Length: 448
Length: 128
Image 1: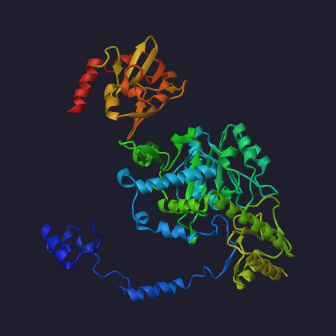
Image 2 (image 1 turned 120 degrees about the horizontal axis):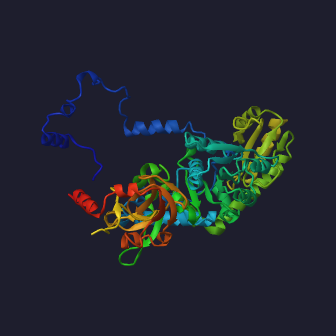
Image 3 (image 1 turned 180 degrees about the vertical axis):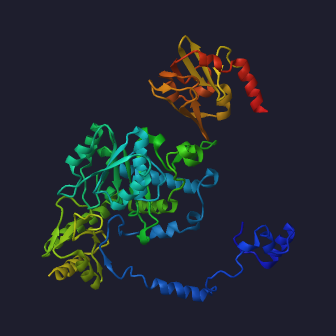
């Protein structure tokens, strides 16, 4: 089928074949009173020249690239090797639709299978799906999955889990009769174990834990896993900064039953909030309740290796309201970019990138810690972000920094009233030493 | 010809009653229409059954079908062999492919189900 618009000749021919003299006649069954008898109130068509000019003018209002930004909080600025754009923009990858017919989709399915394999390796789990929308919906799906597995009504959600992930979980769980109970954070910005113990009981379906958490702290997953399992609860690990998996021990080895999170760090631009990449993995025994598409490896009738979408009986189009989820898609192009990114960097390259994040963050902690009127809020082990507390109110500091072309971080008071005049600051391999020094100097001036 | 001593439901389950011990599965007609069975979701031992209640699922490559309790009762055993060999349901649906053994609540319901002759007639009506 060609995508060329119809000429007047084509239209005349089609109308004649159908047996009407005009397009209006095709709508003759509609009552005359409801017909709009004027043109729609849209501006006239622009020429290509005018259209390009319009978008260029709108584009110039963007300040991206003009500011030095230290924003993290679930979306991270990372290097994207040019091979990612070059390969993922090829027509063979960009144009095909869902691989429902394996006979004509082997390339697509192979990429998904490779992506799933990489996620299993990074998370230390048996099975991964073909991807979900993003980390927030992944967290929600994991909670629903846990509830399907053990039918228990209570889920423990840490306050140190990304606020938008918590909100999304609440939305997904509305009207399901689930009790979402909050677990606080301690003076180190980590999950408060006494709160966890208090909340864990025979009714607890799952414990959710983000690591590194929203404050950037690496949590003690093994301890939390053991406590959850001791009370018969499943352990869900959420990873918002996927790059951390390049150096930290895999959650699977530390006792996670389900691992889910955000893959944006793997080759996806910040892109004004999306499209991003939800990843999810679980252990073999939970396969039947695992949501999302799964690509599987098989053999054709000639014994050659091939790939298909498999275990479709968990899904919408077969089980309808009893399906494991209402999701009937995946983020194929984003997963492709993540696959190219991971296979380009390799195990060693990913670890190197993660190390640079840690080293820059340690340097930043030290330099910022020297600034009078600024306190690094939580002691502990941040990966690539941490919370700072200011002697002045955040709005004043933020404004002063912006005047110097710097976006210093994310103010936390709106989501965490108990952390007024605090901000979350992020440092990745993209920040040079000079950039961090520039931030420290600007903060020194803003706080003097 | 379907086994004479079994009784049948409209949803293609068969049940055999010996005293108050009942054995059930799905019929040859059902397994034939399902295609290759790949997975069976079995009830838990001890689960209480109400007649015509959904007690599990049978999955073939392309579809999922519900399994209904033919009689009220309590699950005494499930065919664990089906976990590793779901194809038993296709190969021997009235024998080795049995699904649940349960303690039946009463005999009256059993008498109320179709016998072999009635079930065969019912199948003829379906295929028209």
